[in-house]
Length: 402
Length: 85
Image 1 (tube, rainbow over the protein chains, first blue to last red):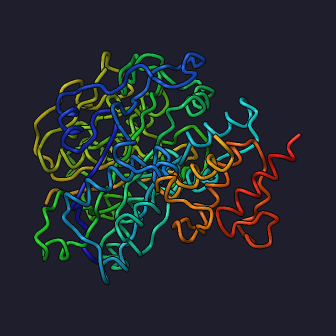
Image 2 (image 1 turned 180 degrees about the vertical axis):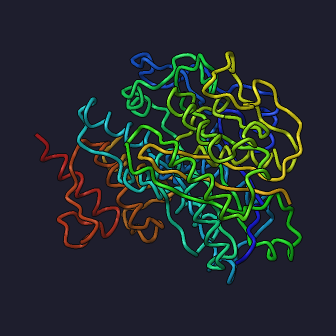
C-alpha cells in the first residue's frame, strides 16, 4: 500500500476566500455567519447563514464560462486553483492520464434549479437557457475541474448529504493508497443559500434563527453555510521526488451506515466509523489529539457524537480536544468535511486548534474539551475528521502530522 | 433596429465579434460558433423575438429552419415573426 499525503489545499467559504484567510479567521475565532442577502429572503423564517461575500465571479470567469458555472462550480474551481497552485503540480502525460477528481456535493446546482423553477413557475416563462442541465448537474464541478486542469483519470461526484466531502476524500485516498492513481483532486462544495435551498431546510425545524452553538447547553440548531474545499492528495514518494511541501498525511478512513433512521443520528454508527478509521490507520485511540467534530449544533447530533467519542476513546476522551468549526463557517452540507479538514491540517501542521465559538453553557451530555471560544496552541500528532450524514451514512478520516 | 440588425447583434455576441464582422454570407462555422453555441444563439433569438424556432440539435439539417448561413437564419426568423399571431 502507498502512503498518501496532502500537498495542496484551497478553499472559499464565509470565513475567507483562501486557505490562509480561513485559517486566520479560525485562529481568531471569527464568525462568518450573518444576515443572508438574496432574493425573497424576507419570506424565510431563517434569515442567517455563512454566506460567501465579495466573491466577484464575473471578474474570474468569462461570459461563456458564466453560462455554464453554477455558484457551486465557481466555488469549486476557485478552491481547486488555489490547491493546485500551492501544490505546484502540473498534470500532463501519464500523470494526467491517471489522476482524477472526486468531489462531494449534496445539492449540486441548487441556485440553478431555483432560478429556473422561479422563471417557469412564478414568472410563467416557457423557455429556459440551453445549459440549465449541464449547469445544475451534481458532477458539473468535478467535470470542470478535470477540464480546467487536464485530469483524465477516475473522476466522479459523491452525494451523501452532509458526509459527501468525507466520502469523496475517502475514495480519493483509497485510489492513491491502492496505486490506482498517483494523485487525486478531492474535497467538495455546496451552494444552497438561495430561497429554495434555505426554505427546504426550514421545513425540518432544526435550524437556528440566531447562531450555531455546538455542544453548548443552549444550542438551538444548525446554520447553513456555503463554499468549497479542494485538496491535492498525492502518493508520498511522488510528492517527495518533486520536492513538494507536505501539509499532512492521510492515514486511514472508515465508512459506516446506521441502517436505522433517515434523519436521527446513531451513536453506534458514529462510533463504528471512528474506531474503523483508527483501525484502518493502525492507530491506538490514545494517539488522537484532536477531532474535528461533525458538531452541527442540533440537540440530537452533538450529544450523540459526544457519546460515541466517549465509547470509542474511553478515558482518553477526556484528554483529547474536539471542536466544531461549523460555529464559524456554518454547515456547508456536502462541502462541509472539506472545509473542516483545514482545521485538522492547522492542528497538525501549525499546532493551533480551532475553537468552537458561541459556546455559552456547559451541557452534561457534551462533557468533552470542546475548545470553547478561543483557539489553543497544542501539539497534535493525529487528528480525526467526522461527518455523519442524514440517511445514517458516516465517514471519518484519520490524518497524521508529517 | 431591424430584424437583420437584431439577429446579427445576437450572433456577433455569441461569436465574440463586432456586428460589422458578421455578413449575410457568413456561415456559423466561419464565425466559430459550434453546436452548443448554435443552441445558445437560438435560445437568445427566441427570447428576443418571442418565437419558437423549430430546431432539433440532433438533426440540424432535417429541421425546417435553415442555418446554412446568416442570411438564411435571418430569412427564417423574418418568416416566423410574420407568422406570429
